Image (cartoon, rainbow, N blue to C red; front, side, top):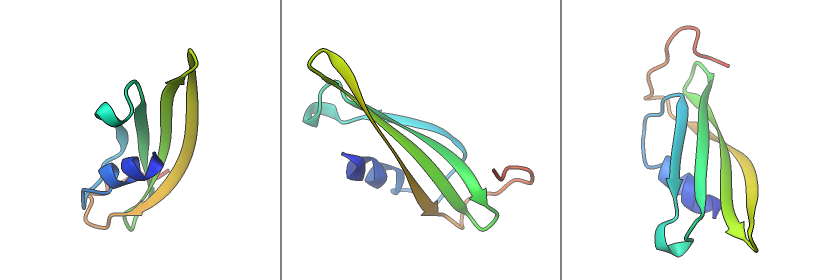
Length: 82
């Protein structure tokens, strides 16, 4: 569920560029997610490209989505913007 991933990422007031991964525990055995976080503006605007994968009928299913997160308290380094 995308909302569970968004909630997990949104728990922090500060973000850094990079990859965050996780799973859904007992609520969805075998399912996992990955979020590629990238700074998009000097004002603390980040883009998170999220991929969720889960097994179904012997195949791996995949769903991709992107969200924007405004985290002005994050440290922005020169040359870091996409």
